Image (cartoon, rainbow, N blue to C red):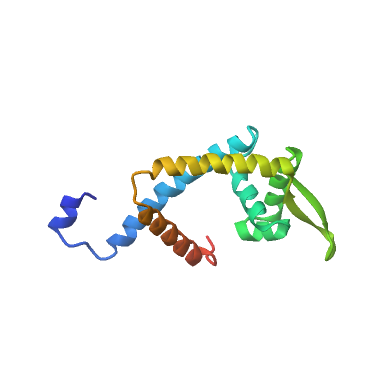
Length: 158
């Protein structure tokens, strides 16, 4: 909606929520494409969704695959297939869980950590370029609002 339309009439009830939904849909589509591109920077054979797995493993390692599946709200079979590929590419490793001999803990390999670090540096550079015209206080505001929204959605189920 343009500013001229907004200024000429009061917003309708619920319109703000529709606007948020539209903007989230755009953000999610673009984030998915962005994440796929970042995954290719980590490894050309990486599945588009695997970048997020690597980021989470890096943030929370060592971690069980069941905890990763729960965090991402996917089934164990799905996470198992994805982790197998990451392991075959040499990006993650599994080690026995000292608290449960049946379970394994996931962590990045040194090569996985190096590749993910390079991809993150490239992503940060893209964000710096994209947001260069914004005052730093606006960048902080965006970060805080996204964090606030993400906190709200932590317990949600699709």
